Picture 1: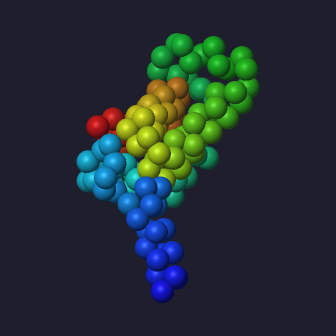
Picture 2: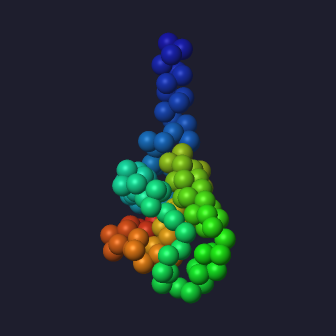
Picture 3: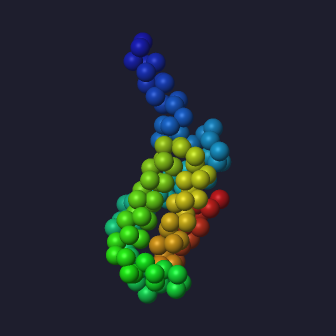
Length: 126
């Protein structure tokens, strides 16, 4: 009896990763964002994040003088926002950060840019 109460308490917790209801986002959009983050991780997007190389915007050229700072910051921001999104911590803010990170990575390097990644980055902004 105690074991079933423990499992019930665990699955009804606000921070349960499979929970998509009773949050600040609509359930279908939250599910889309969680699946999008998992797809990006399986795609190996974190490994493709690198320092700016032939950026679309000249602002990113300033990061070329300081190696690996842009890379480490964006990788950590992507992973942190994604994990917090999975565990339902401030889901709207984390989805926005995740989408901004994806779009910033795509705008900072022309060889990394792909249309499907840009569209997926826009999905996080609901």
